[in-house]
Length: 260
Image 1: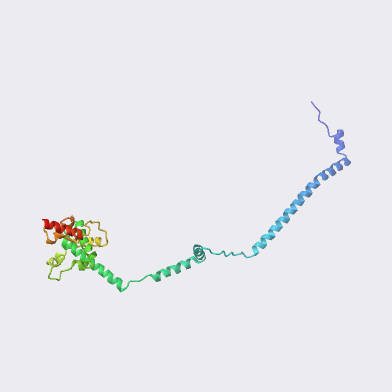
Image 2 (image 1 turned 135 degrees about the vertical axis):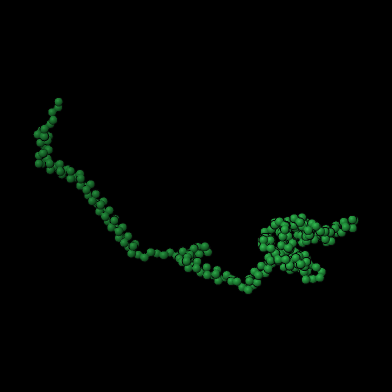
């Protein structure tokens, strides 16, 4: 087993001598001094750098922020800029302009509403007295005849005048109920309510009944003289519907009547 060397051995004794210790310390300081000086210099530079940035920050905070007014190049940007700055005010001004442009009810509006109400009543009367026992399709077909006459140049241009045309003349009425005394019997509530709904439905243009441009009709129980001069367009319920023929169609009808 190897023996441990004692610190009393020659080499340890040499190191412990005073002159030898000073020499070692000198060598150590010589090696460590550049490193210590470098670290000190680096720390000093860092402190100086921090001081400079601190001063710059203080100056920056003390200055007022710059406001850059960028030129507005489009209408959209202009509106956005105004809205961001004072959006509520702009919106209020716009609402006030719209409200100022709105028109309140006038005498003309009231008269127009009254005329529409009267037209609905006239249409409901035609439906009730001419087709109250018909299905909704039959009632709408009768209403469509009235509307077709309003559009035709041979008849008046409003519903009431079309329905009551001829009722005060000796030559007879266009719709039988207006001159045969039928109106002496007041409408029953359920039937009138149903007829009025059909009238509103037709006058709003919500009817899809196909009778073409028919301006005439009669019940299946009769055969009026004028039926041979017109063209049949449809049979709906208890009514047959007709329209005026064109010139060419009229010539064909006359030729057929002559040959028969």
